[in-house]
Image (cartoon, rainbow, N blue to C red):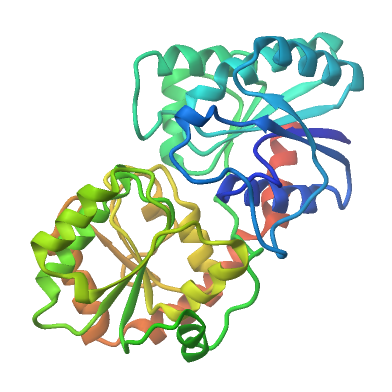
Length: 373
């Protein structure tokens, strides 16, 4: 099948670009596939990070045409007409926030005028974590031009059917992120990062308010006197950095933290996950999380808040712990239980079995089952 993927992709950075890179590499095994990405993904005023471009020699590199301007309607028309002319059987979008809906919706409508192209979107979210007026109207504009929906959690699937009853859809679990290299010895990883500590837990990824880092910091304050554990914070601030630094000072936990708050290059990710005993997701809100699938790839247990679809991939008491959201006491209790009951080895062995469920081959097979219905 001739397929065009339109999404964030290399040389742009981040989890969605990595997802598209891995999807492309699986699809291209048996299909003619082209990727189109953004020449302007976000206007600078809306982008809180330091750079939108991937760095490092081991980045997830795939061939992509850099064409799309997210805020220029004349560009959308040109891209839509270009795709219409190329006549792909399937046009795939990765959708995660309503900001892109006008662009995606316009391109979809134009591309489909060839009466050949069908549109499929893979949804991280339907309802965004950080809601704004007009989100639903914008999302509906795009979704009304979509033929097929892949949802990465049952929570997102339910949101879709509330917004668009009768939509042709399929829930497929988020595959593992296998592009970060092999795990390294825990002590070697600590040496590489120049960190010490017998007990290390990891908070990884962009720091946004909905991810609940402040809740984890409060849990660390509860643990500091009776459990010798250090928290590694690895990720760039996308929210007010000073707010979090003040919480750290007020709680008196600076000595219990190891902070790496620049963007983490792809080549360095394996060291953070390899150094940690378990990964902590104290989210206030979520649909699913790519961080869980990075952890799964490295066979690392996860302790997470019970939000969205996260509990669909973490088996409580088997591959990690699920706790009540926005509850520092419950989170601290789970971390303490993990160490005092020596659960790491058991969880790692169970994850090594579970990881087989989350292959890219299975994901693509499920995608084509939906399209051929």
